[in-house]
Length: 430
Ligand code: KE4
Image 1 (tube, rainbow, N blue to C red):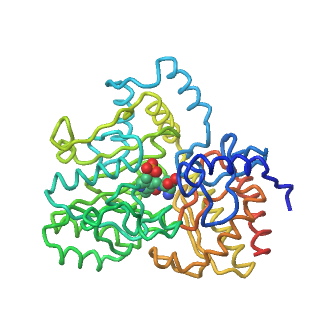
Image 2 (cartoon, rainbow, N blue to C red; image 1 turned 120 degrees about the horizontal axis):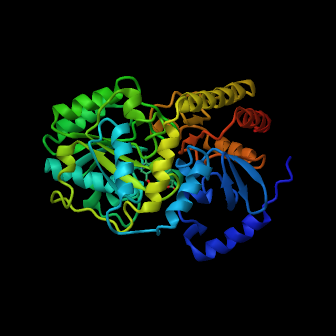
Image 3 (cartoon, protein in one colour; image 1 turned 30 degrees about the horizontal axis):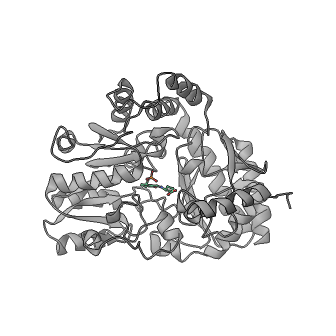
């Protein structure tokens, strides 16, 4: 057993709990579902994090997605240092917005115009308003276990922290706000067809995670995305890919490049901010033309498009354009997940899982896991014991079964081998 001690983390977290609800700025960080005390980070670099007690971790959360080039990449840091000399926020047009917009439009074929905001939540709430403004319809279909940020209308059978905490949706959200949010099980085209039949000409569109990360890792079944594209077109509804997590991670052009599906609108976040607060929504020019001040649909933000966030995003996407990037990410992540599944088998634990590029996940169940209901049937208690065992041996996994794992360009084959060696020790002890 390591000399793992977390005295300072515990002191700081105890104080934090007196200052902030649950001691955190975002619920999933509180380790509620995996138990035990969260670790207070002191600094991050590349594939690693260090806590305030000096313990080092191989980090597979990567700030929940932004750190795909590795934490604090030297080229991102130096670009930010140079940008700082020009100020932190303009509140006025800035050429850096053009530069990042051009990179996003060049990368994501369905995006003809883009609007920057400050988080994935803002991107998703804005895109929902745009769906409704463009179609004149109020209803929207989301999938159980998918998470599109914490805006009221999405807090219906949501994933991520809502699932992690087992919240029955959230108090404070009026029924009349969520009454227009229809839900279906992920990968269930028949359920979507039924919703369209039951709500003729009333559904503005379908929004989904094209690869789910917020119920744990659940890829689309063959034909699911294609089926949604046909169903939305047949019903005069929009298809919206929430690529806040998958964008620039599943492929440089996102899941829509990987699966060859062209949505009408897309949301982005995480990676395009390179670790600073950014979100974005974009898509067909005829739809985006509705967004103020070009059109009547209002959406705004003090810090939207700020030069620092644009700088970090631009440098991150430039780094991701290097040849071989996604081959490397896919290779090391496949080695990791296949190793974990082999070890589970060798040590007598039922497990299933997978990966696509730098996104992975597994469940302690024989599976298969096609949707959130399946994910909930996995052995959550065993996942918690596994998470704690890995943490105490220097491997930092997402503190919830209902999250995905992330690798980066900074993770080496040696890091993966070490992770698998630790996983074998832990799984033997479960
Ligand atoms: P933010 O508002 O947290 O930037 O983005 C919301 C969001 C929207 N869409 C998808 C597919 C997302 O995954 C997210 C946020 N992801 C979670 C982790 N699963 C963020 C971590 C957290 O809530 O602390």
